[in-house]
Amino acid sequence: MGQRTCTFDGCRRILYAKALCSGHWNQQWKGQDLRPLREWGVRQSQIAALIAGPPTDECILVLWPSGETHPQVQINGRIETVGAAALILSGFPRPPDAECCHDPLICNTGRCCNPRHVRWDTKKANEADKVIAGTVIRGTEVNTNVLVESQVREIRALAQARQLTQREIAARYGITQSTVSNIKHRRSWAWLD
Ligand SMILES: [Zn+2]
Ligand SMILES: [Zn+2]
Image (cartoon, rainbow, N blue to C red):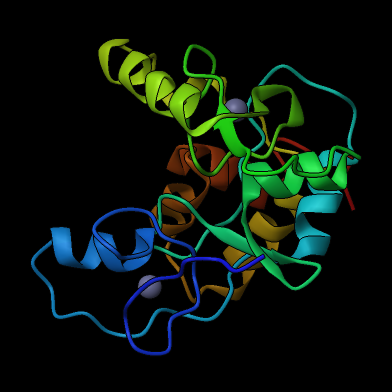
């Protein structure tokens, strides 16, 4: 089955809005000149590792290329959102023409790959979800985010590498700078090697 992809030259990501993927749409929205995006920021193995942890009702957020609200991942040669990837990797293949819908009352973030927060549904249902999501005031993501072990390891490695500031690392994971500091200095997750 063919997939409609971003119209930016050479970009293979799936459409988000205005014939662009979310990354290029974001560039356009910010009034920037469109430029190539970093290569795939999310790997299938990363999603698999994230959803392999103990089941949780909290969002499970992936590390995403900066500026992309809806990171994508290649699964079996197809380009999928991380939510769709979570369903597929959990043993729920995509039904014909179905879209991956985030539960608008629980999370509705394109970075979440908690299989409990997504479902296959029709395009119409997905649009209805977006309307609900737009009218519901949600708490800050920070408080509902739960890091999983693999993310804590990534954060620790990033903090030790010092290529990004703690504030930049925090932004990537939707957490606070002090959380990054606590992880780095083993005031939290001390037991994790
Ligand atoms: Zn694109
Ligand atoms: Zn979620």
